[in-house]
Length: 338
Image (cartoon, rainbow, N blue to C red; front, side, top):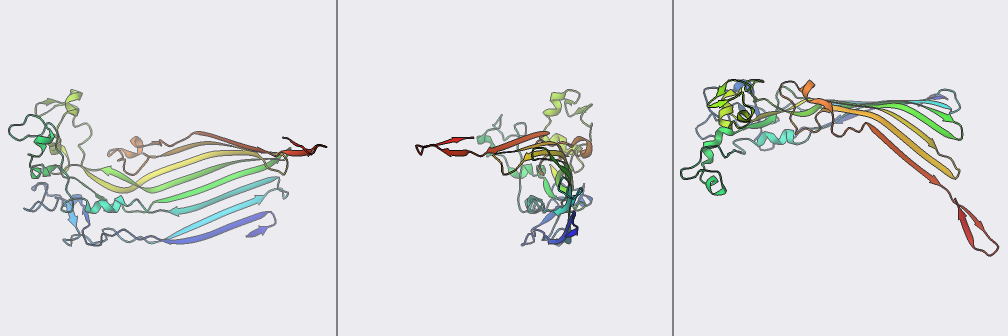
């Protein structure tokens, strides 16, 4: 929309509706910490089907949807261009937009990847072996009763207290000016801010510093190699939920920040020589680099937030083209000079 001859404004809004993934057979489940019963083991029933602290949709303990439906998202856009001097010699451009996104499917799919719908156990070389075997091999492994290792069961589910929607705010502001010899220089700022991004956090972790001193069994914890060699069975009693193994939550606490200074110098005319130079000085910051990499469970803001692996501080690109001139001689042979 033309506000004035030298001022153009574009604006708009979109409406977006994103549905949740729902397990159609009612087999969803979610880990609810306040329901943990310390008097029980890993399971709460004699058949060893239902994990301690896990609420299941098939038992009517939670709704099939597990989380509320997403609302109708309002997604605005705004762009402006101002010819400051009215002759195209000095131009100010800017724009901003809000975007929503759906999380990766694993945040929903994991809700039926735990007992009674799936089981996973772990066995290490220092675990109790069957009689007649002194080391863990493929032969001895088949003699181990998997039901004896059910205490290593873990869970990865949605967090009932952290349900939100990933969103990104992008914006740019630049100033361009004409230079002699038909050149154009433009310098601006480009940024993208991400909030409520999906992240993974382990919650069944031992208190920070608990293994730095003292003894655990016959292990002197002041010796680093002893701490590394501790078996899962020895560590579990120190966890908040000692009957279980690794428990993780999908949450929406992730953040990302990208800011860049961008400069371009170009000469794009009908002449024989054209070029385009672009330089970007930027920084990409955030919580790790992907959702499946768990953040620090004690201090995610200071220990997990930082420069992302795919950050590229300096980027320079250049391109140029030249037209060839054709001339004919008296003998009809042609030659080209660029």
